[in-house]
Amino acid sequence: MNRDLTIGKPDTVLWRFCVPLFGSIIFQQLYNIADSFVAGKFVGEQALAAVGNSYEITLIFIAFAFGCNIGCSVTVSQLFGAKRFRDMKTAVCTTLIASGVLCGLLMITGLVFSGQLLRLIHTPDEVFAASKLYLDIYILSLPFVFYYNVATGIFSALGNSRTPFLFLMCSSLANIGMDILFTTSFSHIFTHGVDGVAWATFLCQGVSCILALIFVFRTFAAFRIKEKAPLFSWPLLGKIAVIAVPSILQQSFISFGNIIIQGVINTFGTSVMAGYSASVKLNNLVITSLTTIGNGISNFTAQNIGAGKRPRVRTGFRAGLKMVWLLCLPLAALYFFCGQTLVRIFLDNPSAAALRTGTQFLRIVAPFYFVVAAKLVADGVLRGAALMRQFMITTFTDLVLRVVLARVLSVTILGSAGIWLAWPIGWTIATAMSLGFYQLAAGPAYEHR
Image 1 (cartoon, rainbow, N blue to C red):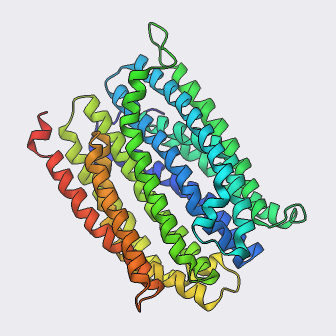
Image 2: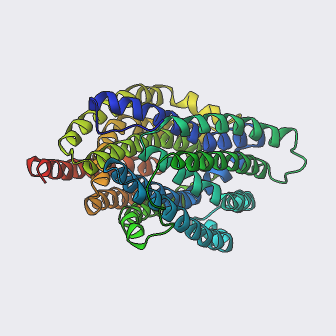
Image 3: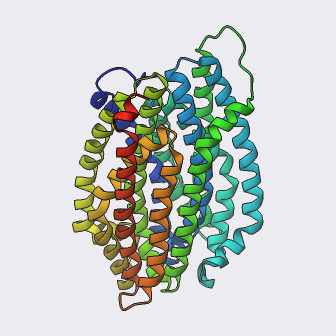
């Protein structure tokens, strides 16, 4: 069901829109969590290390898919709010074409250089073959990743967060079952175990993507326009790129930064790698959930700007802030007090080093979820208002601080704990900047522009 985010009480509108988005991202993260869980429980600690090691590189590709998602979503939101349905259809077709070209280039690059990327992050020899196999299979699934992300961006732009939630719920639950089936009953077919996990995810993502695209085309067929919409528009591509390119750069540089950090982590050995792999998946579940709500704020902001209702943006920001802090409260408490139990979920008979690493990471970062949540809501407003320069400044500040501090602090007496401390320091400084930019953008002058 499409929803107009420009009418109704902002608190109520955002809750109804963002709760399914939150549910969607929970199931989206189940893909990666299921891979790590099955690899750690049914294959072994080295398999978990291999999946976690490859995961940091897969985030680079996800960054491009996410950029296409948010570029299309914000543009379509503004056109939908302005009731420009012909241009809206053209924007969707333009995104699908451009995304296909970009995806093809990334697949070629990834398959050619996957080994070099793994060497770049100092992948230990004992997990190199499994890491490369998992990564190569993931790269083959990129068309599904790209087009599913674009489809969910379109649904969000139209205020429809329920449909992608239903797709993800079904496919994620199926993925868990397929992961276990492929690594147990069909273990004789797969040489490393992690390839069974990767192929199960490939199949489930493919089904989810195809169904999502079918529903997108059916949804847009319902919009009646007087003249046929062009399939491609350079001006609209430029408008989409204004949002997409900074988002891609943001996510890509974050991924490159994470790869550098992963390289630092890898110097501490396989056990620390495995412990970090388990805990960072739990951390990413929170951060991605908060980011998704931030994306919902972007759609809310974009629709209201398109409809000329800018004063609603400030109310939406306050509603979003209450929403993310309510989400952070139980998760921060759970991770801080029950971190060891959660890490054990991913590891069968974990080593003391792996367990200590995962627990320590969660206890350091969990209290600062409230801080980074405020940043992501403010970023959502900046992105929805197409204020990408400010958005990029805060993101790069966070990234540079985390990378530099991880390298510096890890060689002190703090050891690996120094790496984890880089997260809250970077988040805190970048959040202060994001909130400052939001206050400047959403002040009285903003309301009357």
